[in-house]
Length: 490
Image (cartoon, rainbow, N blue to C red):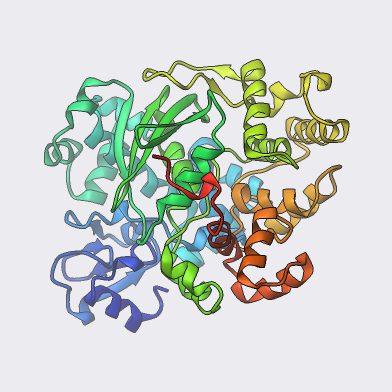
């Protein structure tokens, strides 16, 4: 979008928050870059130039605005609605792959050469993978400086910097403030000062956001010991690259309140990225709802509760395993199956607030279980053990870097994997915004109630007009039912 100069100027002049994250405005006279909704008086159009990423702004010598803090804007929805090389690379960078494995590791995961990945990112984002990872490290550093009392040296290494000097230079270059000056501008909250290892932050999103089906689904399907709904917040354990964590997420009118407890602070950017992905916070609800409203059948559903998101996951392999456990059984039965597996094979964790006891078992841990211990039909036991073995051996990979079409084909080749299981994994684990569930019982009931075709083939053909947002149409169709997944828990 940053190449459409007139459209960008209109967005900046109207301070339209819908475009935050889509592009960044750099002011050539002040050498400052802002988000489109910056509250200051807009600069003259001839002094504006536009960039597709904060990293591109920083590479061009601009520093972040201290008023609108463009580094904290929602991520571009482009990366969650596409499955091409650039989108997959951006999801991996957000997941910390460059910091852990370097650019060669990023390229290896994508199946391209380092030069090709750098060329594609530079062409579309104006910055290479190192610059994009550096911008993310700067934002992580700022969060730690503002929300913890940690010494600057510890923050530098926790944020992923290789040296304190690089940390200091980057913070000064990006924010035009020293790390100490960043801290003095935002006094630490009492909770942050008194609870080591606990971080309290705000996760921004594009309005509107309807929390009912989002948190309702996560709470209704929560696995005891791993997830819970408590005091208006969804809480769960996280398996992270350097350790584990516990997150508490509370819906607020203009943000999601996030409280993180981490065993290793180096996991902060990954934990934030996975929580944002689980809650679908980088979506563009205006574009989604506008497309769905074009169908008169969906118009009243969208108008009644706009801004529905697709509830996703923090662990793709975990969700695939749980999807198999949920085949042809009720939500309660699926939770019971999962809870037994967690108790028997999950890793125990300490929850300072109580309630959460385990990490969901890894595929490697589940590969050693006795299939006869699974209280399910023989054919589903075969499906479960085959999936676990494929994941544990590395023959099947599920992650943010997956090619959606190839992964669908791979899953369909496994015994016991039909269209419903594959599409629900594509929708909620892989993040395909166009995944559709024509055979789902709730969808078929909604179709019958709304006068839509009832057979899977006819309904799929009718739903073609909802592309590329059919996963969101699923949320609106599900909402016609009184199932607990559609309601925010009281």
